[in-house]
Amino acid sequence: MLLRRLTAVASAGLLASVALLAGSPAQAHQAKLGNKSLASVLAADGHHFDHKWGDFDIVDKAVTTVLTAKPNSKVAVLADGTVPVTAFLPTDQAFKLLARDLTGKQFHNERQVWHTLAGMVDAKTLESVLLYHVVPGATVTYKQARMSDGAKLTTALGSKVVADVTKHGVFLVDADKNDQNARVLPRLRNLNQGNKQIAHGINRVLRPIDL
Image (cartoon, rainbow, N blue to C red):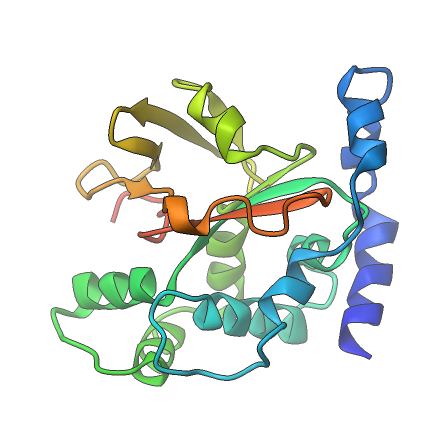
């Protein structure tokens, strides 16, 4: 089974993230959390595109594509629920906006968006984009994020995003200085809450370079 194989890979290479929490007050709290993975959350409604722009079918497709091409990718951490991570997941609408920004075209369904973006990048670039949305080693709730203005979050890619908290919500400042910052969508906050891996839906794709 794909998820079982990916879990084994992630366990072998990424448990060092948990070691960072050893001896800290957060360790006891982490031990009480469940082990449901974000990969299983993404796969809950099946691996297919639909007409709901507010969910995560394109992220799910991207994760599957990367791990098929690169089974040892760090993206596999999303399949190991024992490793604490916080992921910021762009909605399908967020990818639609990215595709429009990059091509100047309007798209009418998720499949068109995916094939357009996938045709522009290779698996390595897609992997980098996904890792830029994952913060390993910590389970950050929306409430905690609301109290973290100015925090620099080190992503699994190794680069940082900055939390910008305003009266309008939680924004993430990425490496692209010329575009709008992604905002955490309150209706999609704390996905998979109660587990070591938590996610928050965002309205734009984070960009690891200045496009």
